[in-house]
Amino acid sequence: MKKIITIIACMLMCIATFGKSYSISDKGIEFIKQYEKCVLTAYADAGGWTIGYGHHGADVYEGMKITKAEADRLLREDIKKFEKSVNRLLDALPYEYEFSQGFIDGFFSFVYNCGEGGAKKSLFYERLMKCRVKNGVMNESDFNFTVAAIKESKISQPGHVKRRYAEHKMMLS
Image (cartoon, rainbow, N blue to C red; front, top):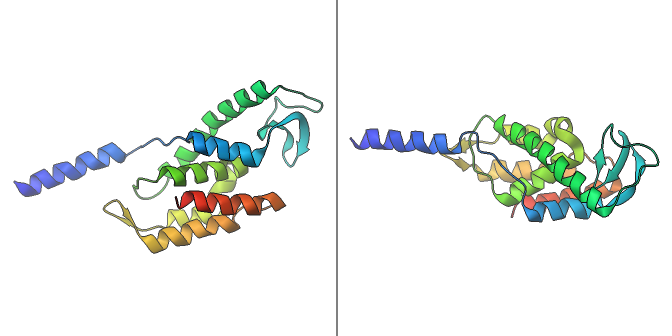
């Protein structure tokens, strides 16, 4: 009887954590704002034109100007898109694990900065895929080794070094 109860309890835990949806916190949003800065006039970036807090796409064009309120609105819309990206990346992990909010905020910043494809190709994500988790507990050495890789992943601008170190610190909180 105890074995059946244990099996049922394990099944309920798996159901409760399967497909968990993570969201960025207010602290994570403020972190992104700190590193993206608010630019109200479109500027040329590697992938085209960017405005606000790192918003880019077909709707941004040379000479475009927005207000601070519009920049905040664009950030909220972008966060919804990137929330899907973050959850897709975490759902693809070959294990179930309950990440801390600090980890999620740091990971969210990383994905927001380099995109889902860039994050997926990073050394950090490669290591994250290989972490060992047993009974919902992450191997501490694997986790520390993985999170350390964020400091060296997707650095193409001088400001990325400081940001990656701050993401690293946030992920460990």
